[in-house]
Amino acid sequence: GKKARRQLLRLITTVLKETLYGVPCKHHRHILKSLDSSDIVVTFNWDLICDNVLSLLEKLDYGTHHDVLRYKPNGTICQRHENRPTLLKLHGSLNWMHCDECKKTNAHILDGKTGALFYQGQGIECPDCKKPTKPVIIPPTLLKSYKNPVIRQVWARAKTAIGNASEIIIVGYSMPPTDFRAKWLFMESTAKRGKLKRLRIFDPKHKDLKQKFVKAFHISEKNVECCKGGIKEACEYLLK
Image (cartoon, rainbow, N blue to C red; front, side, top):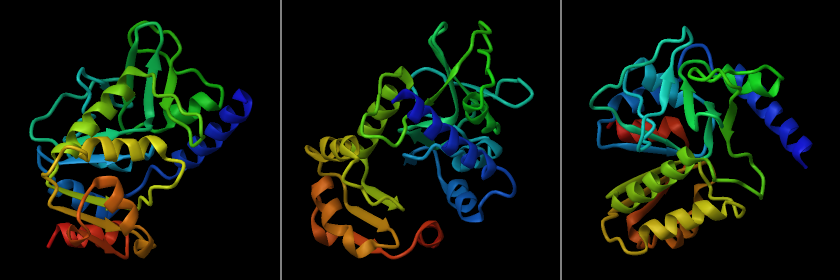
């Protein structure tokens, strides 16, 4: 029920909070630094590894049609920057807090404690109306809600991006059977498209994934390459 869901999210957000700080992963930094304004990163993760690196590089853009307010820990608003890649977080983010009163979603940059603090019983006020806010996170359960307007916009943007892509690189995502909406996204995006020339998959269990993604992306097997590895190997490929 709701109590079990809240306890699950409290555990996950608390664990993630403890992994957010320190020196950024060099592989993430190398990859994200190499991206340009036409590149798009789509992720199902809530963590802020990519967010923090892109924010430090002054290239962070969450890809919504209207601005997601971006606050630094001292309360100042981050300025928008040009020539930045787009980061689409399909299941929300540990630093996204939504106000039901203002109907706005605020992203607290370099402050991944916000979501964890909420689940520990501490209030996070809306910067505008000072009303309580709540995290924008889609939990790992069968019954997922995608009603938040920012989530809907991110999924719509992802559908367009996947449909227009000429090359897609997948890192560490095995498309589990319960990810019904993700399968729908891939199939709906690619059904009427012939632009995808290459699909490359990096995963420790890469041999078991090829047929899954061939079917989901409507792509010929000869254009799909499955590679054993993860972010390190993907970084080496992208920086060749």
